[in-house]
Structures are given as C-alpha cells and as structure tokens.
Image 1: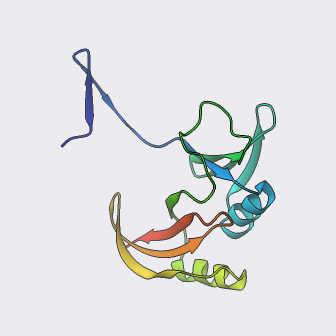
Image 2: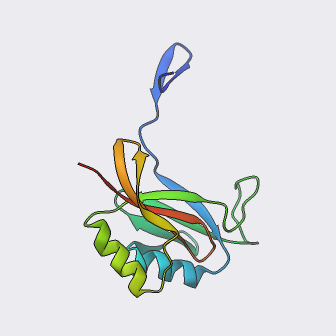
Length: 138
C-alpha cells in the first residue's frame, strides 16, 4: 500500500508529524523530565498553553482534567508510546538517564525505525508513558 490519499482526483501526501499532545498529571514533573533529562525546550504560547520543542516538532501539553477541545476520545496520562531519535551517542544518553536515577526498562536493543535499523533504550516518563530513545545504525 502506498502513502497517497486520493481526493477529488488529486493526491495529498502526508509529509511529517508537526506536533502531538500529551495529557499529563503534573506539568512541572513533565517539563523537568523532557527538558532537563532529554534536552527539549519549554515554550508557552497562546493563552497559557505549554509545549516542549525539539528539532522541527513539538509536544503540546494538556493537564489531565483540563484538556483543550477538541481532544482525543480518551485523553489520559500514561497512554503514549513514543520513539525519539537523539543526536549524539546512545551511551551518553544512557549515562545521563542513569545519573538522573531514570531506570532503563530495556536496551540497548536493535529495532526498526521509520528509516531503517535503530538502537534503542526504553524508559518511562513521569506519567509512565513508554519513551524509546534511539539512534540510527548508520
């Protein structure tokens, strides 16, 4: 199956993911994990909205019980499984996680990413989302 969607005789190609939304129990804990441990940048926008930026993408944050509409049908903390490609050495990320007391669930292990073979570490964020941190294998 190809990735083209046909609409009125034309074609539309999905290019990339711009942002996603995480529903979180504690904004401060989420910000600390993603910014201090993973190196993302915090941003406030709009009327009190919050996001985590990295590369050309971002994660918008919704506080559980105070989600913005429209939203996912079931928006709950701990329901995400995300893979991030890191820059730098995976061993350095592993050392950083261990120094911060972040338990590694699995890894380094070989997996398949969108563009080929990756080596990954698996951890949990403060809401227990599964976070895969990976580098491409050449």
